[in-house]
Length: 210
Image (cartoon, rainbow, N blue to C red; front, top):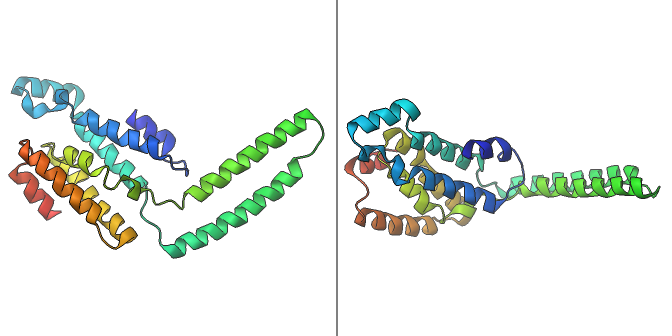
């Protein structure tokens, strides 16, 4: 599912929050399930799973990281203004095209015209949606799930996913001039995870070094 989503949806300019939210939560739930926590298995079972499947947590964790960065960073106000001007120009161009193709020559041409109008409307909405600030939609909601993922004791997975936190800080700061939502959520969730026995010295060192 994760690889299929990455191939089929991230290239679409239109942003569907629920779809992306489902993707992130499903992927995190998959790699944090008990049956994939290889460090809890016997040495023989650990080697057998590694030889046959590899560590699927790392594979999916890398996919989560890649999809997060595909959301894009906050755009500056100047960029948004320029893009809105471009969208307005594109809309006028689309209307001109529609005027050529839409003619009252019967049901067949009318249907074709309606389809073309719908297509142009969709294209306009898609182009306009690139103005959205996508990452901010997941702050602070995804802080907890990302934290849970980074606490998995797999070194390469941690190195790949801990930087997402710093990107979240940057995104919120660019949007609001502070990162209180992220700060409050990470403290709350980290306290909860540590009280539940999660975390280790290596995690702390890696977090501070990145």
